Image 1 (cartoon, rainbow, N blue to C red):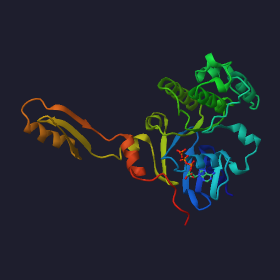
Image 2 (image 1 turned 180 degrees about the vertical axis):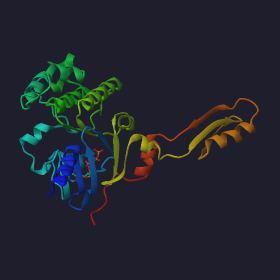
Image 3 (image 1 turned 30 degrees about the vertical axis):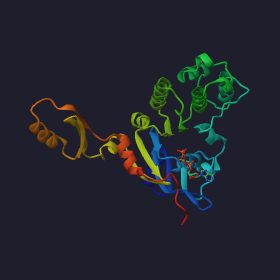
Image 4 (image 1 turned 90 degrees about the vertical axis):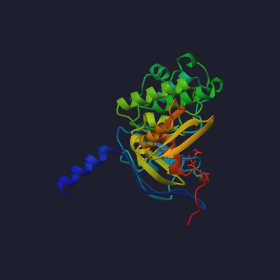
Length: 300
Ligand SMILES: Nc1ncnc2c1ncn2[C@@H]1O[C@H](COP(=O)(O)OP(=O)(O)OP(=O)(O)O)[C@@H](O)[C@H]1O
């Protein structure tokens, strides 16, 4: 290898947290993930969105080293997760969809126990505070609410100060305040340079937190962009108003021109006049297909 090639590959190694090429996972006849290519940079917050059964958890679990792939190349922090050793495990934090709280330990004890497994773990009390569980520190998981157990799962995923955190639907069951608190925690992890991969069904969460969003449908990536880039794919607007007591709605790609015409037709105040631009959710629904069944295609 020539010197400049070595330097180039070193830059590539340090900049890339996750590299996926041609990833495929089948369960018998079912294709859960179909030839997925993806690169996630270090320090990036990456959100994976998609309908139920799209293949998000399967993909994430392969990246975590908990599931074997059928085909393709996967590198996570420079290693193949399929051959993950303890050193690799210490560098990643994982929050699975199912809660993992140890029922015989209190929240604080569970975190103390987990912290011992990592060389540079966070403080237990700081971590409890970051997820808003100080008041429940001495409570066993089975006496926590569903949302509080998820918060404990988040705390367990980040206690080891991992370089890379996987969060599978982390805020399912959170009340609005807990979600905001979780968002602040993600922001502080990002400020520390942590790479974060999260799956979520909340478009606002992905919009707020993610540097880039990957949208997966039927095992394939159908879009990969920044939240702003995805929103920019939406064109046109819906103009609605009330005329002669009847609600009216028009879709238009030229809302200003439409409004000028509408205003010229009305002397007085137009009732309930509203211009609505497509949201990220509209773009998402368009990409995954409104009528798309949440089933992976049959293996070919
Ligand atoms: N162990 C398994 N054996 C057989 N099929 C599986 C298995 N795990 C997942 N599947 C199937 O693979 C497809 C993808 O599932 P996956 O859990 O990855 O979807 P998901 O996008 O995470 O969905 P959700 O949003 O509902 O969590 C689904 O059709 C699912 O039924």
